[in-house]
Length: 219
Image 1 (cartoon, helix red, strand yellow):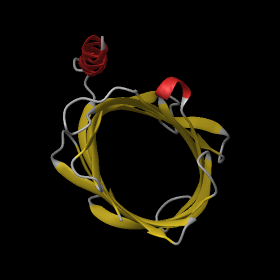
Image 2 (cartoon, helix red, strand yellow):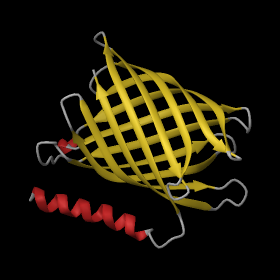
Image 3 (cartoon, helix red, strand yellow):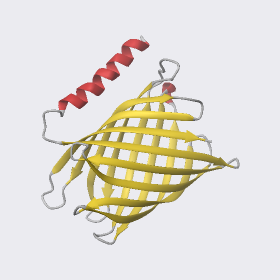
Image 4 (cartoon, one colour):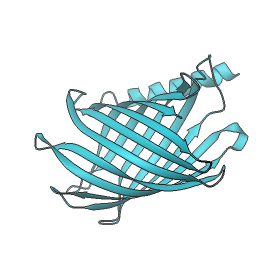
């Protein structure tokens, strides 16, 4: 039964990816590395760096470095904040951006599904373009089935971006893939993401196909 359900999820992931393969959309590769350290009994410090290759994965175009603090209230709710330093390619050169943010996490486990709701309020300010205030809401679902000694686990997620400047929904990210455990403290994810962005001038949506990997080391 578990094997059959796992195959269904895998086929679903492949079908999503193939559904957009014929479109003339950009293919991108993203890599995220995350480190978390428990401080005391109720606190956690997190460091993250991310790198992105766009233009059919030929152009290194984005990187960020992030430090955050999370207070662990209980098994159902965490809250914190952080700061992100961004380098993003624009007009063939990397330009700086900064982003302080507040974040809250809600957790629940119906029928052994692991569900996380991350709500994030961020303010992005730049020297080369207008500042943006953004609300992001992400739902992560990990299925209750694990395979092999690496605890491979199917997962899906959906994230929406609401920009206060203009009051519009301007980005959506749907992901489907697999989570796994390499060691007790080192976990990873590999997934396909359909990234949709609303263009400012024409109000049309552009899509990108993203292959993303993530490694998370916990202390």
